[in-house]
Image (cartoon, rainbow, N blue to C red; front, side):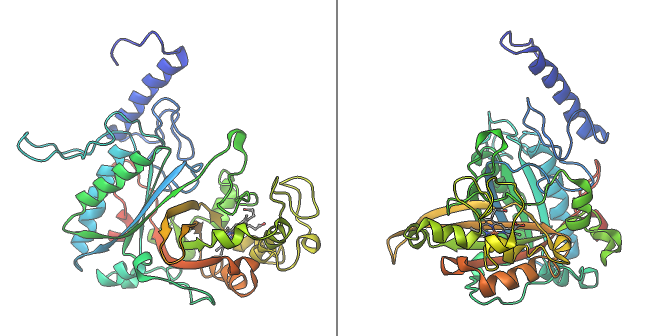
Length: 404
Ligand code: HEM
């Protein structure tokens, strides 16, 4: 560290020294270095630790921006899958530390890193990687396919588009700066060239109010009020993390991600009276309180919220509901204009982590697809399920246990 800037506070200087130690520790193979943890970040460098028993970006407090990208494998070779995962591991270690990707050649060659994150810090970047069922089959690892890794059935109202669905591999890039997220995905895509081709991607954003207040979706309601608490480790073990005995040992510490690109007819919604909007969700718009209650986190009275309210269909609060609960980590999306109607395109990019989509997402969505009043205003246009790989130990590789 060069001579400290006199404008830096003592805490910042100490933090900076700690950050340098942490970066060295990544290369040196230490585990759990400094004050970096999977769920937290370094206040000075903006780094979220890449290494750990679980990948970062799942229980990590949500960043402001998302760029989600999926890829198709170009070939059916297991060696190629191993190669791209090894290259992505090395790149992700650097990118999440706020560093450019490695490998600069002499000046006559194109630079290894594309450069647009130059002076930007890590911005809490997390890169979370998953693999789809098709990829396992294609590279001859079908016998290792976890029973949980299956496409959901067709639900009433589904209007899925292939160009927003599926994929052999995915990366969820989240950062507080959208350019940092883009830079990461761009460079991962570039590094994977020849082995994978980008299939589809989706950007998302989340306007986060101060003081930890629940953010709102584009229908104007607080979204996440009764989400699972990602800092509750016992709850994550029960509902989110795959265990060794779940059917695929290589997935221990991983999770299953269900992705749904849900378009929202915001113009129709904006013509709907407030009382009707509130009865559809079962919560008040102003402060997110359940209908019939006064504060956001008051218990839900199913009778007052209404049996067909979104929050009751999504969580009936009956026997078995606790095991069904999912960790939602979605983002708002808005993208251009629907030319045929002259309306803004907007939606919710639904991302949910869970231990078994067959017992969690599928029963929830089965009830919602049948009876949710929201269905009049939304359309599910994209869908994908990924096995999100277990975390990487220093010196290890993404998918190490799968490919061993
Ligand atoms: C555009 C689509 C959707 C919108 C706008 C939406 C919005 C909301 C809102 C405002 C809440 C209440 C606050 C909260 O607890 O988070 C909520 C709760 C919830 N939603 Fe959705 N949601 C959508 C789709 C879905 C889907 C597809 C699922 C899962 C299949 C889902 C599952 C849940 C769950 C589990 C809860 C918590 C219920 C509780 O425990 O009280 N939502 N959603």
